[in-house]
Image (cartoon, rainbow, N blue to C red; front, side, top):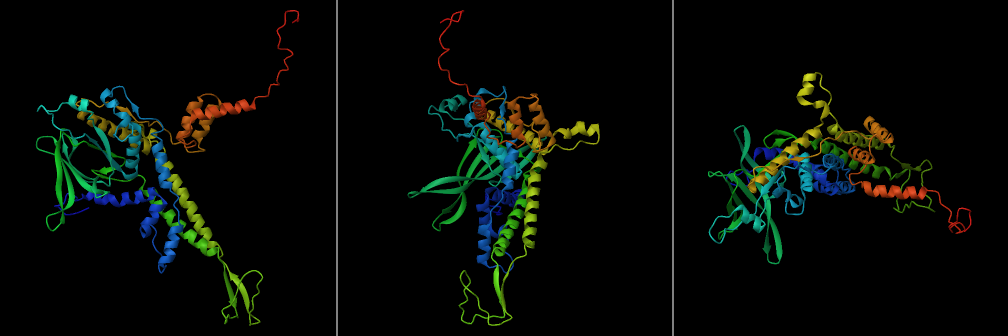
Length: 489
């Protein structure tokens, strides 16, 4: 990226401020291999530690990825049920929801991925794009009917925050309206028999005609000198009156600035990574006691230690002995790891807990804080963002409204073993709720995996019940023949 005002790759200050957090979070989410590749960025080399010893210590370390586990748990709550498509969604948009990105992702899968990235990194973007079309052969302008007949349709593109490096907005009629955005995208070209993937800059901005201009910039060699410069490779006009990008904020501070909800947990995870490395290093030392000798020499350099061998010391007062670790540092390291793991485990549940009751009835009425959690707040904001994307889709199709959706948010943050779980179990025992409802609540509480299949489990239960039934002795056929009322055959 660049800070050259003449370069289309110039970044905004907000991007520069957010990038370190995004890099850190993504590295932790990517797991052990990514943490090892980051090297000293997250595992500093000790003073006077040799490079060989450092790399051995780094390669032995593995990440307990509580950051990814917690993020998956958060995302699993609102998507424990599919996104509900309301009756007011136009049929033209409904037809797109099974392949909303033209890459095979349905509405629910796409929404989950967008939500997950926005929660992890404070915000994420979706572009509602439309394929470019050629002019009609008869000279008449294209119509929406032409697009329908040709299979031309809008589609959604998720843009990671690391890709969108510049945005400018203005407040118009009390509403924040994008004026320009620039982001990175990839293009593939042939180089002999190889395919080469390179980055290019895509620029969208509102023009004087009230539509959106698009420019594709590439960093290419030009002229006899073959010096690389930025130049416009392609450009066109979007037939839409606003930049078709929606940004979902999980924690907005200001325009394109936010606090990543999971950043503090990532820091704890990095601390655990570092402590794990030290713990494994000290265990390596402690597991190999050192043989020491006082009063003796090995002038011939032929001292052998092992079974069926004996040791000789010329000094009558000399002795051989092992120097071993006391274990105190190992215990301290183990306690540190245990405490860090506890803190990481509590971090996720705290974000999903209901907020405490306010002191006054007025405050409770104003923000209903006693019945919402941070995760529920974020889910409701995501639902709004999702409906804004639906509206942009409707604009491309010439429709007045994109309809409404509902993302599940009526979930509790009942911890495993908590009072709420006990009440839930008692309700099922008394048949106050159905088995299906009980299983749904167990999933939300994290007791059962999200992929738990109720039907398959019910079939297994039925099989177990059949196995428990007493065996009926086989009939010998003596009583099989029908008899009359007198008992005669």
